[in-house]
Length: 335
Ligand SMILES: *[C@@H]1O[C@H](CO)[C@@H](O)[C@H](O)[C@H]1NC(C)=O
Ligand SMILES: *[C@@H]1O[C@H](CO)[C@@H](O)[C@H](O)[C@H]1NC(C)=O
Image (cartoon, rainbow, N blue to C red):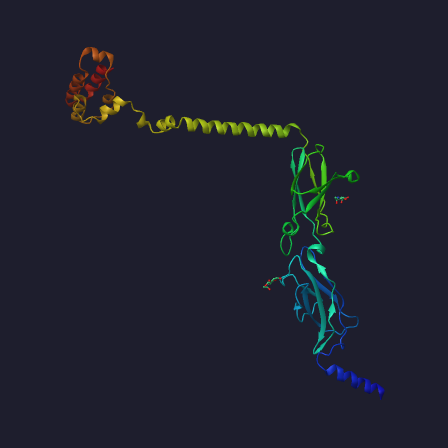
């Protein structure tokens, strides 16, 4: 009888909707943050029935509880998209549900994001610059805001060592620039670096970067030769540009030779055909191999012998009669 009475009592409680205490609350509810996210996790109570769902709420120190993920089946809720502030202190709570039953709320720890978030590892690359190595550091990406916005005075702690000599590692703390030249290195050697971020607000340093290695160049001359070649090429280009700029007038005249005609040529070409030369030339009918006629220029001999135009005029006349002979004639006269 007592067993059936117990079953009845149980049935009564089971049928009352949402009565607290009928389901055991989840265990180990905790808030964590990495790179400024906010994630709420818990574990199902030992011996919890299958088919449970969970509902969560969260609050900051300045606000009442607000709903987070509702009726989820996974024991995890990412609260990052719920408009969280990087300076906020957050608390969350979770309860299990099965049909109409619900457990008590289970509270999480508090977390103050900027002081407690785990800062991820920076990414590091090494560039070989002759005998030096240039280290380029990239901050981890934050889910909310940026590392440099939250931690304006973040610094890098750089550790580097010659490969296989980790016990002789050198340390450069408090570096603010994200590009650093390591210049006390031996040539033709492989070095490895690891970087960690330190902030004032967050007592935990970041996760260390991956160990990254790079080699220094061997030849002392090679960077000089390269620099010299670059310098010579640059100097040649600059000289060329200067020459072009200074001599532009000449160069443009050379490229457009019509401008280079002497003034008296221009004048005589632009004059109306008043000169007898022009007149005569116009009256000459086109002839084969007329280039001989273009050769007609006043020579010293012709000037001595008299008016060269007359000679041309007569040659034109001859040409009309016997073109073959006349070519000879003209060239004799003019040359
Ligand atoms: C986000 O939070 C800020 C302050 O915490 C509030 O002023 C703002 O209205 C919120 N925005 C939304 C979309 O909830
Ligand atoms: C920098 O990192 C090295 C190696 O991880 C560590 O020993 C040293 O204490 C750190 N320096 C600072 C200032 O935190």
